[in-house]
Image (cartoon, rainbow, N blue to C red; front, side, top):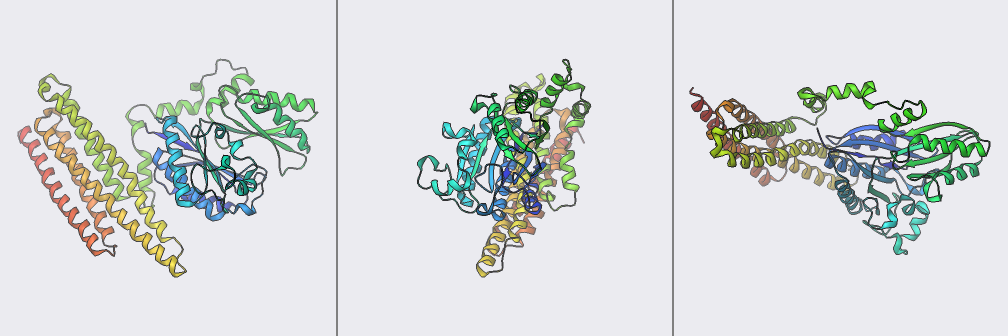
Amino acid sequence: MGRFVECVPNFSEGRRAEVVEAICARIRAVPGVRLLDVEMDASHHRAVVTFVGPPEAVAEAAFRAAEEAARWIDMREHRGAHPRIGATDVIPFVPLRGVTMEECVELARRVGERIGRELGIPVYLYGEAATRPERRDLATIRRGEYEALVHEIAVDPDRAPDYGPAVVGPAGATAVGARPVLIAYNVYLGTSDMEIARAIARAVRHSSGGLRYVQALGVAVDRPGQVQVSMNLTDYRRTPIHRVMALIRDEAARYGVPVVESEIVGLVPAEALIDAARHVLQLHHLAPEQVLENRLQAEEETGLAGALPREFLSLVAAGTPAPGGGSVAALAGALAAALGRMVANLTAGKKRYADVAPEMRELDATLARLQEELLTLVVRDAESYQGILEARRRPGAAPEEAEARHRAVQEAMREAARVPLATAERTVKVLEFLMHIASVGNESALTDAAVAAAMARAAIQGAAQNVRVNAAGLEDVGLAEEFRRQMAALERRGEELAEAVLGIVAGRQGG
């Protein structure tokens, strides 16, 4: 099972679908990232986007989304019901599976620093990543919103950003942080009286003496005769949805106002809805396993069938340029490393091979590191190709723009050659360790060592194709020739090692 982080950035755009789509396209372009949900609200003039993936991929997607938002959204012209400080108003990282909160804090700090440095946007760290106690709460950072921050950031030390300049431009500022899963929950009231909405919000929110783990404010909406109580439920286990709704109903009744409906913005954990069903329907013994979709997912994830990389294969087969041959070559190298580890572990666990057990365990650890590096190169290869496409899409009408685009394309092509070269280098190391494993390893697993050698050979040959095609596009003839020379040497070495491993296997098997 993979490691997953959720990211739920909020953008100050809820009326132009083409702008939100441009932002989402940058997110979808990052290999390994899955865009799960997009919500636009014209009254709030805000879009909430939800995506998940491995930590590094999610961090890259978050940066690209902020970069795209800065191109399209001018905060000097923005007006909406929801408090905001920037085009990308907030970027939270949420640990989902196999990732700790501490890792999400580190992600937030890295992405925040990069946004400040590369985009020139002031960044405030919040939530678990906050550098000051008062900045844990977004409301403190958003005090006075964009309009106040423009004037205060340079003169008030309390408003100094954690990263980036102490100057607010058209893209505003961004809050980047780490937090647990929260639920964005809105309740519509059957009245146009904003004072009632604000009074109910005060009764509900914790900061005014209401429910713990609830943030709330009264909001005007584009619905005749209605207003909204807009909320974030920051710990739905301790303050569940049904308890929040019950208090709002009681408060609304005091004013003779009906609750019209409620809504969830973005995604919600199934656990929260099951808990609400238990309470409202008095299903006191309802178990998550009784939900049909939960049971189906559990069945699909059981055993080898659940571990097959179907999603990666679908991405390869999708008819898009990336992931492609370079990513597949890196995966082949990782599979070769995994097979080598298999033979090493089958050797270390047998009494017959007790004398080589310590070195087999050491080889397993070394190959595990190479395996992980090769898996990283699967993603990096796809990203490098995407980098070429993005460089080519840069504006080039003016002479200085054309020159900048040209430099960007050349740098992207250099990276696209370096990545498969790194794949070949690491795969050659896999073969070097595989030779020793095949020489002294468990005889019953020698066929697996032979398959590992074949996979490694394919990985190096595939990497070579990608090195050559990208080197051919380089204007730096000397560098291109150096790439080709290094790759040729790795090919020769890889072929020698693969043949040697196959020869050792054949000799030990007696044929």
